[in-house]
Structure formats: structure tokens, C-alpha cells
Image 1 (tube, rainbow, N blue to C red):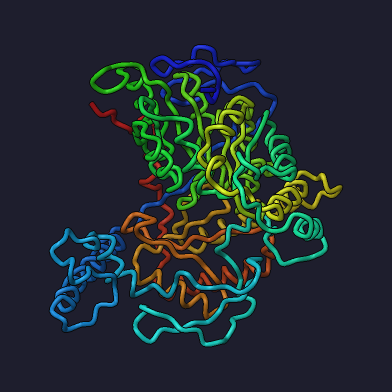
Image 2: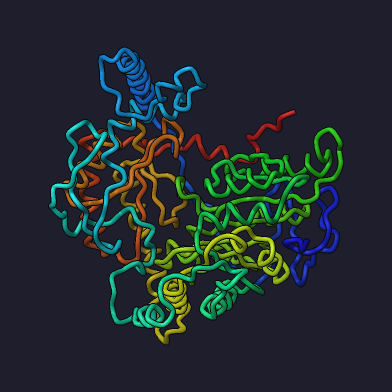
Length: 548
């Protein structure tokens, strides 16, 4: 098969990988000592991230809350089993009562007894475009969130702080979208075929050429679903006898793709270069377990922006390690493409890196581009290989033509190919809004996770009861937020996750910040003590003890 970077691998060493005109990077414990001289000072951009630890009392109260909820959950399950309380959850059929239970794991217990109490804060239906403002359909429950009914009332002009509409391109129809309408009239909605059969249209080829130009790589391939771009293509790149080194906070699509591949998976601490280097060094020295044969390939899986933490990958250091140990690098830019970098070209541009430093560039069109689907880009031999071997290309229906045209329109807008600078202005406005929103929240005393330039802004609330109260009260103030808890986060790290958009005006952000200030006082959620975090020890190379 065509290797992602070309050449063959022995003990993780790529023997014919082209270095082109790159300068050598000297590394010690994964830390770059001499940067690439590519003429871009952004390479030296410092990593400014915050992961402040919670006060001890907040942690204790959070676990006490879960403990009390668990005790009452077992009591209610006992009452349900005895027929005293009605059970509305999924249960075993009577004729299968002696079978191994299907619904007796902790996640199901959590869903029945804790999640169900606060379920009204998720899956709220909206009935408008997900712009800076949107409309929400009001619903109520008569049975403690087991079922809902709509009242017929529409909550108008709710400030949207939850959608990944980073550049404000997911909006209702206007004249700038006429090309999308024209494509709909010409091609229709569906393709009704896979890419390998009769589902490759001229629009797909136009989009792929534009993506390659946008990313400054040799070639690209687009897919109809962002999640499947990871989960269906990683198995085509690695398999049995290969090693995947995955960041502990990687998205579920990366985790699923890694598991489906059949490769050996090892996890390194989030953004910790010494943890990653230890795994790389051990992989090269010891090879595969038992046989000690060389790994066929070593693939590093990371994200550009981590969607639950708001942190940005330490790309220069990872590239240095990748070159030192001759591994491959797969970067998922689902949240970072379009949202960071001077012209919106993601973390590669953000750090001033050469796109050829990344073997597999992946991203989605669901966030900054206001559409759906994903892409994989890089060397032409990599893309040609995927056109034949990708499960998504072989079995999944092709991208809808109007969706492809929306991506083309959005990408040209960002690149300035529409003859204006409005796209660049939106990228700059997003960066301005992000810095302003994050700085104000920190000044108020909230614990905020992530990089100062990440438009994904997690605000730590910890307790599930506070998650529910936070979202309910803000909706009454016509502010729509996303709250996130277990299993998407660690059990005691529930949070609200804000997504800043270029479409947000200063007035909108100030309205939200004023409401958050009041909510923080009401819920006693201003936990920050402006102290040095315990969490950045993940980034402190000298404090990491190597395991035997």
C-alpha cells in the first residue's frame, strides 16, 4: 500500500521519507530547541493555556452529590424491581429474565437515576438557522423528563452560544447563497451512489482541488460525514502489526477508528511531550510485544483544538518528535480549521508550520464552513490510496451536491476568491471575540479551560445540579448554552461549553457576560482563585516520572 508519508518502516523508522528543504530540529525530551527556519515567526507562538484546579470543597461536594444520587438510585431501582415504582427505562423482556442482562452497566444506571433528572437541558429542538440568534421550540414534561410535549410556543431570538458556527456561515438564505440554489436545481439533493461507483461528481472534484489549494497540499478527498472521515479511514491506513499513539482526550471518532483498525493502541497524557516520547522510544527499542518484531507503522493521533478542553495541540513539539523517531502524524482539525491561524487555515498555519510536516491532514466542514462532511488531505499517493481502500469511499453515499457547493462558497469566501476581504475579516473578528470573551470570564472569577485563542470555551461547574440550573436559568434569559457532563467529561468535571462566533456582536457578548456574572453569583460557581493550576503539570516536562 502507499504509505502516508512514502517509504517503508522498520522499528518505526521511515527509511525514505523526504525531508525536502526543512531544517533539522534539535530536540531534547520532545522540546524544540531550534525551530524550523521557514520565515514565519508564528512558529515561536507560546502555548498559553489554563487548567486551574477546583477548590477542594467543590470536589468534595461534587462527589458527595454523586454519592447521594447513587444511593437514591439504588433505592429507586429496588422499588422498581418490586413493582412499587413504575420503570420507564429500557428493561429485559419477561421471557429473557434469565439471560445475561443487557441494561445493567453503570452508564445505564447513571442514565436512569441522574441524567434523567436533568435531561431537559439536552436535545432541545430549534426551528431556525443556527446563527448568532436562533429560535427554540418550548417543551415541558409531565413525568419528570421521561417524555416531553411541545407547548406550541416559540422562544424567539435566543443568543446562540453553543453551535460550532465559528465564522457565522451557517445562516438562513440570502443572495450570496444563490450558487447553492442553482446547484440544487441542477443536481438535485442526493447522489444515490458511492464515490467508487457513480457518485463522483464534477462538484466533488472542484471541491477537492479547492481544499488542496486552501491547505497548500498536493491532494485532498472529501467525505459525506465528518465522524466517518476518522472512523472509516484510520482502519485503511493502519492495521494489525501497527502502533497507534493516541492523545488521552481524542474525540470519539478517532478512538473508534483506532479500535476498528486492529492496531495496537497506546495512550499518552494530553499534550505531554515526555509521555509521548517515552512511548515512541519504547516502541522503537522493544518493537511488538512477545515477538519483538518491528512495528509496521507508528501513527500519532492528535486533534488541532480539543473540543471539551479548548486546548490547542503542541504541534511544533509533536512534529519534532515525529521526525526524531520517524513516525507518522495524523492531525484532526475538525474544530481548528477555519477558526485559528491568521487566515483561518488551522493549527498548521497558527504555528507557522509547513503542511508537509503533517502526514495526514483531516478536518470537517461542519463547523467553520456551515455545512457537513469531512476531508483528508496530504500527499497525492496517500489520497490515491484512500480513493481505493477507504471504507467511506467504497460503501458510503457521496456528499450531497448543494452541500459541496456551500463548502466551495464558504472556502472561497475565507480565501478571498470572491473578490472581497470579508472572509479574512471574519477570521480576525472571531479571534477578537474569543480573546474578549475569555478574558472577561477570567476576570469574573470563573475557571476556564484551554488556550487563550481557542473559540471553544469550557466553563467549569462540576456539580450536575449546577449544570441543570445553569442551562435552565440562561434559557429563561434567552441565552442558549451547551452543558456537558459524564460520560463526555470526567465524572467530577461537568462544564458549560461556549462556542464563540464571528457573528456575535459586542452587545451580544456583553449580554451573555452580564447574565453569566449573575449566574456565577447565584450558583456560587466562581471557583477561580487565580492560582497556578495543578493541571499544567501535564505540560511540565521535568515533573513527569517515567514508568518502568
